[in-house]
Length: 490
Image 1: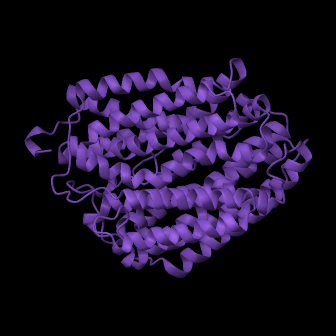
Image 2: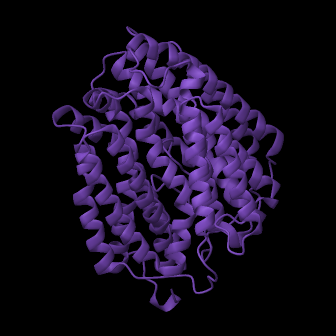
Image 3: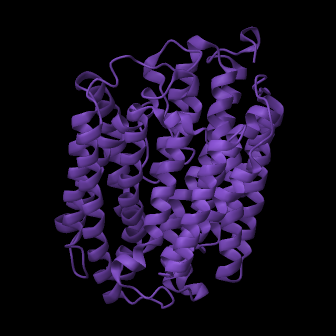
């Protein structure tokens, strides 16, 4: 978008653009935070086994992780507002299908469709901001977008728990419809169109299909403990990487990994978010199914994680800029591991202030110490011309790590995925899984200590078209994004 056509932050046009971007990413963010709280009630009403609960989360994460880079490429090519709007409408229709689903199979299929919609709207939300605001105002716009994203993450568990308690789990999907209608109205009436005129070649359809099929097959293999499917998924993913190396217009240009620091940061991201995925999948189930919390009580119980991250993540980013990211990225995962060890004390009869709350506060502190430096390192270690790609890749890596780890829970915990899990069995599985996730967290810290340089942030990397380093966004959000702040639910 030409500089002369870009808008100021304090103008009416700027406020409309910010509103559309915030609400668009907020729809996806809200859905991500409320579903976990609804899983126990949903599982009882649809008579769902443990594998079914996993697929409610993984169906969405799978399609989103596999296609988010394609979504960004489509926006650059065909128009960011157009693709963003299509994504919002798609997401809303899929949400309606989720709400009326009469079986777990239909619900999972609708969740996959939701993920496709999310892959179209998530990258467009930030891209529209970056292309629409003047350089001097872009940092303020991204900061405001990020702050409202944090508010969405905070109210999500409360809203989800309330809707499940007073109405039905189906309302956590229906709430998306009026929000989506507002976003579409604002996008059509007030958001400018933009695209990348330098884009050439075709969209990498083959790469997108291979990536999605490979992840789906491997995920199924892990959930069902099927080595045949797991191996098949590995083979398909190998074919995906081959297509990306040889293709003319790959969705994932592998030369971005020539930066050792970028590769290292993404390796840490994969391992750490594998641990986080396990925790965030199981903690809501345990609080409700084993400790007897209502949905709204479970949502409120988890709020300290978000509060600690909102308060301290920006400070952690500033600390990493001052002393380098290596030490925060080393000790942060270790603090997370200590929290997970504390969580092995969570069982029926455990008090919230004496057992649950200390573990959650420690968990939030570890995340706050780690996530901002990790995000900043992933972005700063890539070539500046690859900033958007780097943030998208890091986002996809985080989601894939969580996806595969959640799929592996039955294997790790010794559960039968085809059975409905009782409270006692769930608690034992939770304790085993927390020990495994703690091991992953320690491994992430050790990997950061061995591979991340302390000086990687010494030369600030600005968002393209700006001169303000502090505005470096965390693209993880869309369920998620802040200047050097990210959310654990990504």
